[in-house]
Length: 350
Ligand code: V47
Ligand code: SF4
Image (cartoon, rainbow, N blue to C red; front, side, top):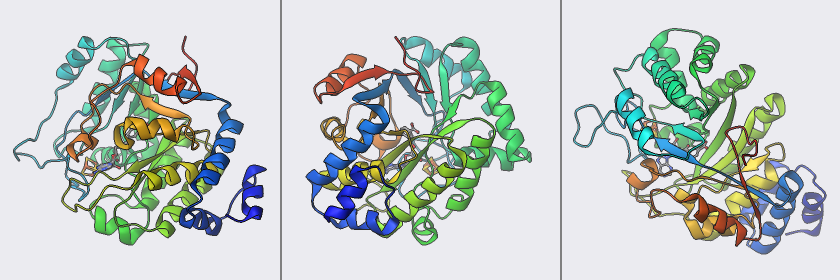
């Protein structure tokens, strides 16, 4: 890495897309990790966040059938399932000690907008102190289509029913050609960004993701990051960025990304997205050990206890379905960082 570029990053300067591509091409992983750590320290000091949360996937029935998704099924296909709201509530009642419910699922052909609203309000009624992080931009856009309501109103109703924050899924890769090869039925990248902009305007904070390690190249990754950085400059509504390493037991197959590639993705996104407060190392997809190392490469968040994960595990992720709070804390402490139990909006919980 050139001294000029390293100096620019070390002093907190904003790097260009061309410089980010250079970083991806560089094998100077230690310098990269050091610079990303500096960037993380500027944002969050020595703190690493985690949350006591539960992942709930209400249905795997999905009209999109993205080619990289081994979780989804068509209606009537073996393995297809849908949980009733009652089943979700009774599942949650069996699990104690969570501060957030994370809800993401397929686009069910028969569910009306009201069903999603009832799901939120029933969860809020039963667990009033629990944060609800629910529905990707893809699901929200599907609700807009089904309801015929303007997006703004869709968000107002979701919020009134208990939605606190939105997860960052469905972003995949914005580049139209790559996106079309991966998930031809899915909303465009441009529309994904539009939904997020409307969420931010409605006062709903969201995350953003990038699915990498399939057929994309460095240029596609950096263009994706650039569009996120631009929107964040305008709205400031993103909380965390989460690079998602592609899990390859799917229709399109291929290989899992290498550990070095995973660390580069964490570090370069930390450096490039200078207007995002948090970069998450999602241990479910990265693996527990590499996620811990990622805490020295710019990540400041480990997502959470999760408890039961289906999307990554359907596509071959070998991690456990969930981690105990104490395990997360130990991962953080042994990486030389300070664990902070957070709420859905990054407030510190005792
Ligand atoms: O949108 C699907 C991805 C996402 C595969 O915001 C795959 O806090 C890898 O977005 N390999 C859902 N990824 C998960 C997600 C998420 C997870 C944890 C925290 C947050 C957050 C968000 O999973 C989907 C899609 O991009 N996905 N299949 C696969 N084979
Ligand atoms: Fe459906 Fe989401 Fe899977 Fe695509 S990634 S098939 S939208 S559940």
